[in-house]
Image (cartoon, rainbow, N blue to C red):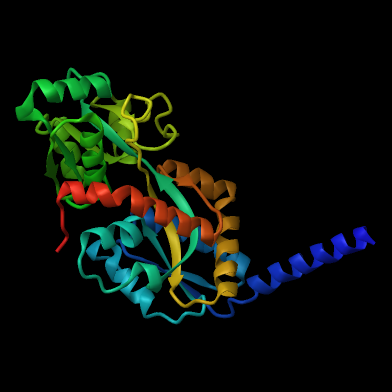
Length: 320
């Protein structure tokens, strides 16, 4: 009898899975708030191909660049809540933007329905290869001894690298001047040219210059070492307790999307994230595949809101 009940329960679970997957009955559009060719766009196109096969529906990517992803978020807010529209966005859209802007055209808590955590990406703390600092502790000592050069650069004001620099300064007990640049390329140029003491950006932007000896990445920002630079310690390992914070990408649906459609999208995305070719391409982009349930993503958003809120406040930065 118990065996029959277990088999029945298993069959019901299987049928429920099929039912959930059958909920998406029209083509799916993926909104990406950044231009073609960037990490977000490449990631979305990789996943779209896999999702189409699993959902048995066409899945197309639409780039809606501008305002750091906030334009795409507003479009998602106003899209039909039927599972046919998804946004793939970095942590800045659901977590940072509400912390730095007093007015947004969307409410992250009600207009964005968490679907799936897609990938993590780390930041590196780098110096010019000729800089005397060989470790984070060396860099902190340098800052304390050279107040005029106590600065760090980031690719943009209000970016996660900016706030990670603020976190680093608080953790190390030093006052640092933030030097914002207009993108990662100008930051790298300034760092190679020794125009800024240290630079914080995504590890993928630094790894080749680190390996070629033009930059030295002293530490990375995640809870574990970056797969791109496994010999480089995390900031916590380097002695900065509590200095930890990775970026991430996630998928969202319009806020009132019914749970069956969210489950269907989540299942398709989790399956896509397990594909060996997807994982291999992610690795080359400096992305660490994630996954999990919609509830897992909601919990991650809550943790990161609590993590970054005091850091953003300490930075004094406002987006408007």
